[in-house]
Structures are given as C-alpha cells and as structure tokens.
Image 1 (cartoon, rainbow, N blue to C red):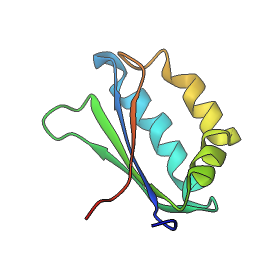
Image 2: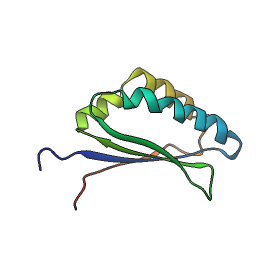
Image 3: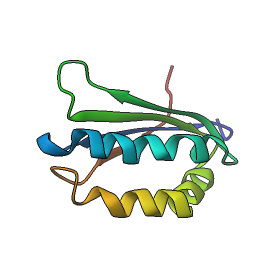
Image 4: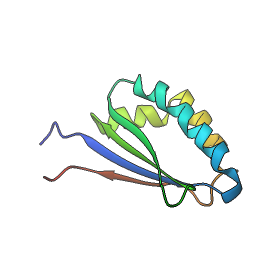
Length: 99
C-alpha cells in the first residue's frame, strides 16, 4: 500500500450574501489545479438544497503533490480571498481508501 493515493474532501460554506463571489473564486482554482503534477481528480460540488455549501472532491498521487498544490500561487491567491466570503475556515479532511 505504499503507492496509495490521497483523497481530500474540502467543505467551504459561503456567507449567504457571498455565494456567487465564493463560487467564482472556487471555479478559478479548477483549471490551473487540474494542470498540476500529481492531481488525479479535482471536482467542485455545490449542494442542491443549500447553495452556500461547496465541496471539493480531490485525489492526489501523494502527500507531496497535495502540499505542492497548497503552496501554488493560484491556490494562495484563492485562499487569501476566502476570509471575507466564508462563515468559518474550510473543513479539509484527508483520507486513504480502505476498500
């Protein structure tokens, strides 16, 4: 299992009056991230019953690939914009597939 990928679920909740602004910031992350080395999957979801609720579903080849992403210029720019748009800090969880 040394070659196991890393899965990430990142949930971000927009302030009710900032949904469209947050969506724009999050969508800007998609294409540059999908071009990064080590990304397998990078999808953004919006909750149908609660439009303030966004979730990234990610899969990375390694912890190092994820850390490179987190330090990338486009991610840093996007992360800097979040504070004024979200209710709380993003809930980011890292997982390994068991079965």
